[in-house]
Length: 339
Image 1 (spheres, rainbow, N blue to C red):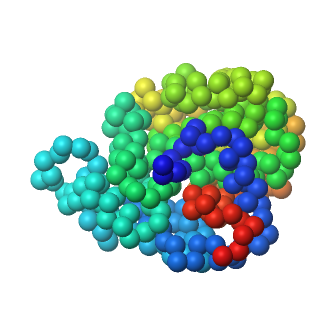
Image 2 (image 1 turned 180 degrees about the vertical axis):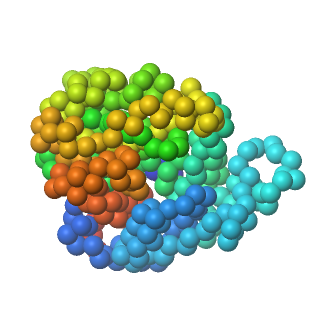
């Protein structure tokens, strides 16, 4: 059976911990030859800075080769829906793409944001699932409606600073942004923090901004398994009080999904959800992070971004290490056995 990395929901905490432990070693000793002769195709349907750089560099540091493809730009456009009469812009179906790439490379990774038209359709995550269904090599999620690679980097950063993470208070706070963004990183932040037994608080300005129920229910389930707490609040002070780790992200309100103009009238009243020094002062000396890119003085103030409590740059670096560890895991290459 092919092992994919589509969602951390498919992986046990023990398995994820092994990846994180390997990532710590790789941070200390980055160059290995474990994936000599191996290759990965990186399909980017959307822009990237950290993801592309860290995957390309990571594969190189492990002795392998990364091939970057941008369907619709330097590669043929891809149709993902089954049974389509392909008389539009797409030149090739995912069935052929997956099978051809599988015959060339050892892993395939894809970054494919939702269409932002219909959440009931987008939440099915059909693009990456279509790729995984037809690929005969491991498939990696570089961000769709979730971002499991970012999850690993975030948890590696949290563990570095908090050491023992179980029952530590993790706050995922919504922040203002001029336009509605993907819920992927927010969904993932809930999944990984709860899976590792943290006390999780979701702070958002109104019920409209509560994340999809599937992720809420998984977070509740994971917290229940660990005997930890899961809370949703719209009160800023309640959320920040005694927090050990604050994670900021903006996302669009699901009731207004695909209606950015209508949602803009709602979100503009919540600019005060910015992460600032006053809010961080009521935490338990919490660390602050964000997946980046971040709009300064919109999502978080300069005061917070430039403070010692901000570990966003460390988290970004950790993308490199966790992804290398994850690829080694998918390729069944133990870190302690040099090839």
